[in-house]
Image 1: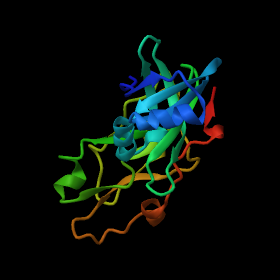
Image 2 (image 1 turned 120 degrees about the vertical axis):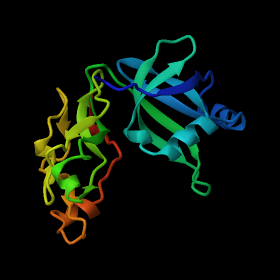
Image 3 (image 1 turned 135 degrees about the vertical axis):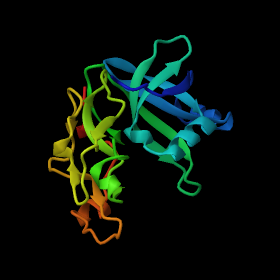
Length: 215
């Protein structure tokens, strides 16, 4: 079942151009534009404090949002760009793109590990080391999974859980085209070798590009 899509509340912006944008900022708003989806671009403005809070929470550009504008039908959008002040690093403008329910988009989906307590490895004092608490999947905008559940009830010390051992939600595929590690059960002494050191240290680019969304 798809998880609840968070709301992004905005106001329609009547004016366009630099003057209107400056006025929006003086009013405590961040100007922006919504485009795509077979409709004309629409200027909007988002309360500065609300946007800043969402940006600081992380994954803003990798999250599907339910855009709410009073008097208009809700629409699903994804952020394409957030412009920031070069000195203060605060948001000054944002671009949002409309998505159809059938659009494909890359999103980070949380991973939940169930059955660890009471598993064979747990009974022997093992510790589950989570390498990836979330994974990037290519999903359909109209059917976004809330989470990925991994059954760890049979895990032994030394076992490694990879993405290939997990049944992904219908229609979802991994963005990474290799069998990467999600977690492993290590011995309590800490002497168990890390099965894939690269999985712990690798850095992934999470920003969306035009190639990561299909209309």
